[in-house]
Every structure is written in C-alpha cells, then in structure tokens.
Image (tube, rainbow over all chains, first blue to last red):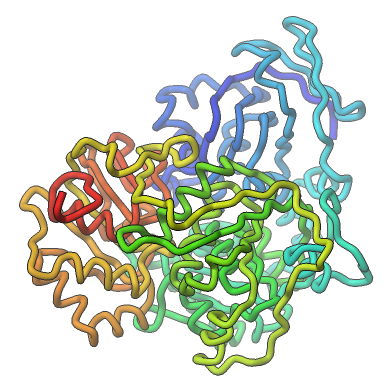
Length: 167
Length: 415
C-alpha cells in the first residue's frame, strides 16, 4: 500500500457504526448509502468530503454493530481512519473491506480539523504537515495488510474461485 | 494461559502457547448466519459456492421476523433458497426462530470450550456458556463458510471478580452497568468472569452480562464452567464438550472486584453507555413515553417474568406504550403457558412475536422524533431505534416495567 496524504476531519469519542451506516442505508442503492454517513451527528458533512480525506477520531471508534460501516465511509471517499482506539469488529470489517484503520494513541493531541497529515506506512509514522508534529502508530500485522492490499476478503475469495453467482 | 487463550489455542493448529499480541488462525466449531446477511449485497450476489461443512452452519432468522417491507422480504427469500442449496439442517425460519444467540444456546450449539462465528455483533453473548465468539462482518463470514477458518489478534485479558449476591430490586443489567463503570471501554481486550458470586447467577443473568460486554468493545467475554452451566447442558442433553479452566498461573492484565450486593438499579443516559450511567434514584422522575422489553440482552424468560409480575394488578400508564418482545419461540411459548403474556397484555402492554425487533429500529416499535424511550435492549446510540431525535435510556426489564406503570423512570413501584 502507498503512503497516504490527506486533509483531516476531526471526530470525538465513541463514533459508532449506526452513525456511519444508519438503519435507513440497508435498503438504499449502493451509490446513495455513503451520503447518510454521520447524518445524525453531523448533518451535511458527507457532502463536504473530498476523495482522499482522512477521519481522525477519539477513543473506541467504530463501536457497535457488524453492519458494513467501514465500506460506507470508504465509499464516501475517506482514505483512512486514525483513532485513539478502534473497536475490534470495526477493525476486522475495515481490513476485510480493504480499508485502512490505524490506532495511534495521542493523535487527537497533534491535529486540528483541516490539517494535512501524511501517513508513512514504512516507518509507522503519522506526520502533521500543518504543524510538523509527528506520532507513531501501531502497524497492522503483514497478514492483515495483505488482505487490505488485495482489496479485501471478498476479492481474495473471488480470486480463489470460492464464490458463486447471484441467488 | 487463561480460559480465552486456551480456547483459542485449542482451535489453532501446531501452537503450544497463545499470548497477548499474537495473531493466530483458528478453526471455528460453528458458523451462524442471520437474516441480516441477506442485506449485504455481496452475500446475495456472490455467495460462497459451498460451505466447508453444512452440519456446522446454522441459518437463523431474527432481525426482520416477519419482514417489514417488500425489499427485505425478497432478499430473505434468497436466503431460504440458499439454506436449501447448502442442505442446512439447522435452519430456523419464522415460526421456529428467535434471536440467534438465544437459539444457539437452546439448541446446544454453545458447547463449553467451543469457538463460535456469527455475523451479529452481540455474539460475545456466548461467553456465558464457557464458549468464545465475537461479532464478525458478513464478508468475513463468507470466508468462514468457504474455509472453516478465520484469524484473531489475541488481546490482553481483564479479570472481573463478581462477588456476593444481587439484591431483589436489581438485575443482571445493573451488574453490567457496574462493570462498565469500573472498566470503561476496553477495545481489543477480553473479559473473564470469576468470583464467588457467579454461582448465584442464572444462565439468563450470565447471558445478559456477556451480551452487554459488546458495548465495552470487548473482544471476547467468558464465564467459568460450573454446576449451573452443567445443569443447563444436562437439561438439553448435550454432553460432548470440553469445558476450559484457566491455568493456575494464568495472566490477567487488570483485575476488578464488583460487589453484587452493592449494585443498585441504574440507567444509561441517551447516546452512549460508557461514562454515561446514573443510578435510577438520581433520575428525578424523568418522563418517558415508550417502554421496550426485549433483545438478546434482556428478552429472556426471566425478563418477561419480571415484567409480568410487576404489571400484575397494575396498568401501563396512559401516556406510555409498552412493547414486549420475547427473544425466542421457546421463550414465547413458555411465557404463554405460564400466563406472563396474558398478564402483560391485560395490563395494556403489547407483546410481539420473537425477533430482535425494536432494538435495531427496523420494525416492531420504530420510534419517532419526540419519543423518549426506556428500553431493556442493547444499544442507545443516536438514531438506533428510529428517529435520530428520539432519546433512548437503557435499563433492566424490571426498571422498564416499573417505568411503564409510572410514566417516568423509576426503580420501585412504591416510590
């Protein structure tokens, strides 16, 4: 995976899956779903996101259900989530959807909304280019990075010819 | 190793020791698919060609029973087709179904020492049965159906000692709130329950506590194997299992002691649970107009019984609508036989068919903008049960039933 450069949107603690993928999304068309992300806690936000933007958040990001919340913010154009801590189910779902989610304790102390950050995946370092402050993140095991690099678990299953046709 | 590390080790190949920080590949004993899988486009458009073992897969309809609209009905019909195609014997459709974690317990899938995969995020519920499992996304379950395997990052384990006995006016939900106040959120970490108070907790109570551990962002939770669990398994004629005890030198990252006798009725205020819990006694008669009893946390027979007993010779407040949703067909039928449903309906409560129902805001009690809800369900996220403007308080079935009579949040009928 290439290093990531993007403008950040700052969110607080306990941002849950139901905020990222509200109930109404379940039966919408795929292209409509992403615009409902964060509509309850931050109305209008989804329309302001540009492709490649990054979400920085506080503790316990992604707490909640197994719904495809990671897909929804990925499909909105978000390139990566960096949080103080991340719920394990959200982390798994991110990996399995080919989406990068990083835990970097202290990240919320070195950024404000609108800063540009650079994620150096080789040196496990996040650099805030707006103030030159740096922080390390805990890298994901290579095994999981490989799933992300393959575009997620569904792609891997398709490549192995383990999936069938529509029901 | 502790219980969780030992169960993980037993399901891996060629690993002698499991420690925090490891990433391991495991074989799962049972994969459970709910009707929610039908709402994931990949599952419907590209289902696994064939399951690794049809006898280790269960399909349980729970979230949308019966389907609330045409789209969901059409998608769920495709899962029926799949159940037939894959020759799934453990298929629970409406009429025999219930919430997957509750059905899994009733049908004996939760054998002590085993490892369960399920698409639902409250799969941590299985911990009550000396079994481990966590919620997984639909794409991951597709991988498990195809291969029988998945991976886990081994987290640190917290030991929670439950000591003493709970008081009559409190419930297991209140015990969970006490735990949540002590630990806070614990993403990536596990919880093991120990202590002399466990022997006084029924399987319903343990299940309520383990279910709610999902709301701490815990990876796995687990209770020890004891006579209460053994009796449960004996009663459903399941004997082929290997319960797991921790080693004497098992490592725990932190230890918390909870005195069950000190626990009092509590509520979680709207939007989140962590750092948002108050004693009911401090709620100053907060008015509510919707009361919900149900879910994998607190829709079990003992919860329905609590509601029926509290509503006996009482009436639901004229400003309140009370909806009670039993967690499984078995619970529903037992509640019918024991007269609980008649008692609740007679008091002005509405009893629905078994389903996850109002908990996820999909049907059977979707709430509107001005509704103020007190619910025995699992989550109080903004917008969880319908409108983003509705306020959701969480509490035990007892507190919800009392509040339904009073019209405000209350922990006692005589208050």
